[in-house]
Image 1 (cartoon, rainbow, N blue to C red):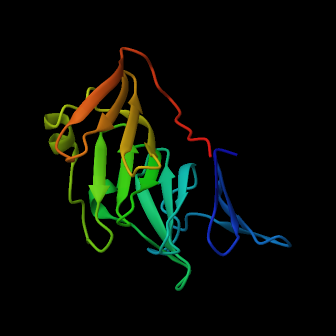
Image 2: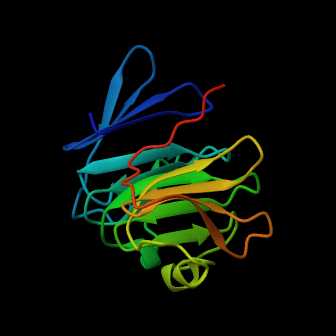
Amino acid sequence: ITALAQDKRGFLWIGTQDGLIRYDGYRYRKFTHDAKRTNSLLANYVYSLYAASDGRLWVGTRSDGVTIYNPQTEEFEHPKELSNGMVRALVEDSNGGMWIGTEQGLYYRARDAEGITLGNANTLAMGLRAKSVSSLLIDKNGRLWVGNGRGLQILSRDGKRFETVIADKDITALHQSS
């Protein structure tokens, strides 16, 4: 098991090195990549998961980017801008936008946007200390925290720059207690 998430319908999603599993409390259903179907799981090695407020499940893969499961159609969407690389962290903000932390950088996709609205070049220009992102967290105040191999940073209240909280430490996981 590489990742876990529970959606608002109560399904438990289990990411593995050999696909994605949905558990409904009684049965398991496995989703895998099928090269003959363009709307199947993008890749079998699932690295990260996030159950979004709109009911969709964001799936980060180990080497093939991100894919989004739509429970209405039971199909996967593959955003072209994030079609390769390891997706290590996913988190949703209060506007329904998704922050995507990858080995290649930090990206943002607004809720109803078709593509990326903020890319890695932008986030580096905003002071992000490392290209590779290990962990993400939205705190109780709606602020974005970013962990990476060069420390811990928080997005400023105006959303224009990253402020360093801890420097030169490898921050691989973030958790907020209740």
